[in-house]
Image 1 (cartoon, chains in turn red, purple):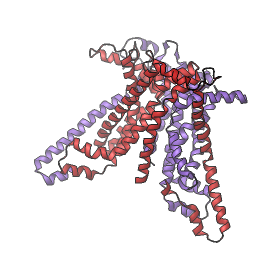
Image 2: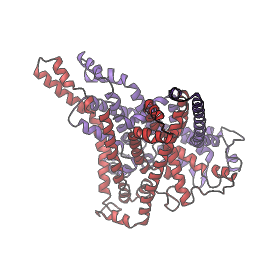
Image 3: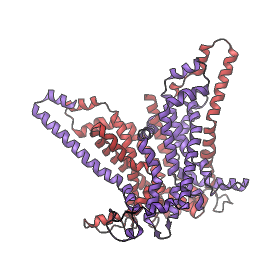
Image 4: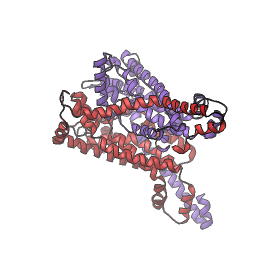
Length: 312
Length: 301
């Protein structure tokens, strides 16, 4: 970032070298101006992001009525609950599986879109990005209706192939499958767009050189496409991992965590515990367990973003 | 280009097989694209199909993929119901105010961070990016408690009022918008604002006359992002508002149209479609800006 900053103070100095006093004024004004320009941003981040984040740490150490300090009592209580470990497991399964399939589908579809003539790409891209544009709460309602136990349009269609009615949201396996499916449906277009942009930035000469050397399609992908796209793939995957791990809308609307808490994620369980059962400290405690994995992903993203900044 | 290379390298027969390969690759591409398009477009299409059905047709076990007696009654019913219009009004008000607030905060901040080097500016830029990575599901509980405490101390009603969301949503929109605006501002040639400064323009004039017009595409992308995020936000309104007249569209549809075990699917799908309409319309007209904003978020650094 530093290399793009104009040294405006220095510029002024060279343009008007007359008075040292006015120079000091200009410099003083510059940092004052900068301070006032960023003040609203700083206030917003400090008051509504940083403060609540630390407040949540404090809340997590109180008892249910929020009258007494219990230290790590909430944490030890959670560790003893089976539901908690189930939520940990489910969140990991959900995030990893969903991100993997989003990335895979995005990668494959990006290649198909890249293959077709340039003029038609715009139209296809526009069509394939629609799931990302619809508010997830709204599109999940459509999925809920597609999965409906008695009028399921999927089961209606499957019955023609002799596949029996599937309890989409009633059975543990299928409920998890459905939740992941909806998340993949919603998130894959994002990967598609990112990968398509990355594919377009790979120089054609590399593929031509590979074609002359007799590389097959697999070698072209493995030795050219993937290394060239590595950075984008890393950033997109990590970013999506954070968003998916913290997902709320889809599970909340589709299953509300059911059947028997078998699809709860950290966010939905924290909502149920903290807001619906109004045990705010315990809810804060549950949502805090998202922090470690988010922090790890954030560190890696930051490293990649900075690397990109230095390359450019 | 590749056919040219093959032409030089091998006999003409090979050229034929190569172009036949390409034709097949193209056909397969289209085939799979159609499959994926079906997968991606089924839910919205099914929303539309269901929204055109009457309750009687939905409960009759006919082919769910076809409308036998199309009717607009669901649309008429929703668009004349005060409750639904209220949701729509709340959502629009919140989204418009949030977009304005976001722009007022993030454009000056991005300008300062991109062009004025000051103590801690690099750290702040990194901090902005990190804030963008903090999800809503981490902050809703402390924010809820904070609002309750403030309400207790000052006597100002904050919980269960739609306008409180106007203060909360910028935490989601401002970091991203600032981040991509920093990217856009940084890509503007330094000569442009140096010239303006030499001509005697103030910082404010440089921002208004040079930066905003030149970075207008980025500005549009950021605006679209802010609008879409505040329109689609579901968790915060679900937690902070409960009275029917204070709800926003996504929460309103999921909580009021589902009454107990009775699902009025025709109306739910109509509501969902109408709720998805504003982002979809914006997307249809400003697709390129939308995609530019999407890719800029992770790539501009």
